Image (cartoon, rainbow, N blue to C red; front, top):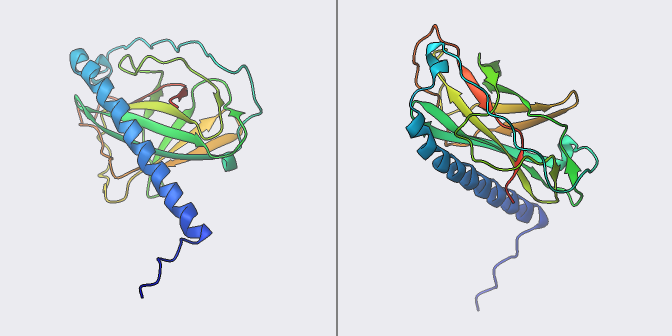
Length: 210
């Protein structure tokens, strides 16, 4: 007589849930990147890559629940990923509220830092890119909902990055909250359009995607 399969332990079950959420988040980020790539193709290579001026897009006004207590890092889980789009890398970082209580992110878009093996890559941050999906910004994240920070990276001519070890994105909201978003296997660096032009990262404010 064949014994029934052993049910997973609580620790094993929790690990499986985390892995499933991470895979789902990566699929959402890459799907969003695919939509934005179509718009990026029509824009061509940004003037910022060659040292020209690019006007910042305005952030949509916030909507939804008016307020909630500020999020704590312990309430949040994040990952990041992107793919190639007309000589740039386009995608984002997803931040999921893993708690059972709604919380809010500090106002404004985050300051973003990209590191690889503990070394910070030299990147200049700017406002949202015109190719980002048009969605209303929301600070409040409901329980188990995800906020997406869209990112587009242009022109990297720095030291070589071994993509077998994905970079890590750090998002700083205000003066207190820092969210660590490890990169997925869907990582790359943008095409080097010239070492004299700055390496530029366009960053959106948080968008609630579910």
